[in-house]
Image (cartoon, rainbow over all chains, first blue to last red; front, side, top):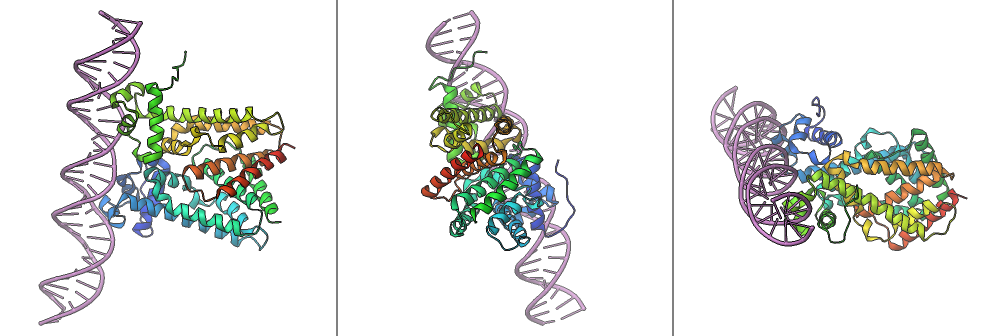
Length: 186
Length: 186
DNA sequence: TTTACCTTACCGTCCAGCCGGTACAGTCCC
DNA sequence: GGGACTGTACCGGCTGGACGGTAAGGTAAA
């Protein structure tokens, strides 16, 4: 059961938050307009006023996820002094950090992809941009790419709740990623 | 307990193959019993004779994927001489190789997860076992884990068709993974 | 005749999207 | 200032189609 939430923020924002909650709690297949509208404390008509179709809701969800991730990376970047591989390290700390905005990331990705693979276009573009930046960053491309891919892999496992690392193991892995990032830009 | 023989062309096998085709071609949300039975050239009743529910079909699909992956790894392992980090290298070559059985991997994972997150149990167990083996293998755990995670990340990106690497870049990444695997077991 | 395998026809539920409303805040004209 | 009109935000019942699953029967081999 998805609890109703007090009216805070714009209705549009409330709906998106509710959709994330629904998808994490009951799964992508049960992400229905009824469930989302109920969780957001609006009627289905109200939801459809802001998102004229389910597809538009999913698109907005994917966009929100991309924005959140960028936000987390930027925050992490701000806390790092200017150094070699700063961007890559910001990705490690930003994406694998504990920011609650990225908690639902995998589920959102899942719900989006499950409903329509073409909705991943937003994410595809972001990945392409990251890849270009990586190639242009002047470091060891292959090593930096491995670090990025490992970040993805870990985040994915954790989002699908199939990760089997202990907290200690996870910590050594993050440290190893930071070391590898260092080496890539030495 | 003699397992049902996976005779090539048996209806059961045809259905599973058809399900993979459907999920890659039209997406997880449109993986319906009608679509699968039609693609397999059987009636819906015929499909339900072999898989009494959609859930049982999805479970079989997940199991088939786990088996395929293990098969690919074993094949790759056979082609490697006994050396340090042989298992890890077999994962790199097996999973990131060109075996068609793993083509639909991500889509299958997606379809399974989208319909019911608990169906990932089979995969969760496999990941846990791999993690245990990695921890017991005597190499540099963190580094080996990073390699495994990067394999996952790359495979996932490719399955969702959001990867943006050129073939040349991909090749250098695979080489880098092999190098890192070497280092982890030196 | 029994069993394995498969078919067609059908049923009940669920869900996306539609539609006819309500409430209310401007704003323009008199 | 007050009536008429307009646009924004939202409500919730309804429906048509899709989909998972059932039932009853048919056929061929053992």
